[in-house]
Length: 89
Image (cartoon, rainbow, N blue to C red; front, side, top):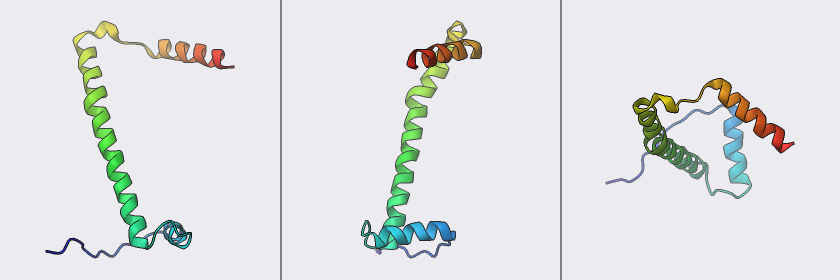
C-alpha cells in the first residue's frame, strides 16, 4: 500500500514565496518537505495544547469548582501584575 498521497493545495502568494525561499536557501530539499514540516509543527502544537488543557487547565478548574474561595479577582490580578511590573523597572 502506498504511504504517500498526492494533494493539490493553493497558497497565497506570500506563503508560496516563503515555501520557495526555504527550498532556495537549502533549508529543505523540496516544497513538499516544507509543507510536511509545517504540518508536523502544527500537530506538535495541537498535542501541547491538549496536554496543557488536560494536565493543568482541567485540574485547576476542578479545584476551583471544589473550593470557590480559591478564586482570585481581576482586580487582584491587576494589582499583582502592576507590582511585578514596578519591581522590574
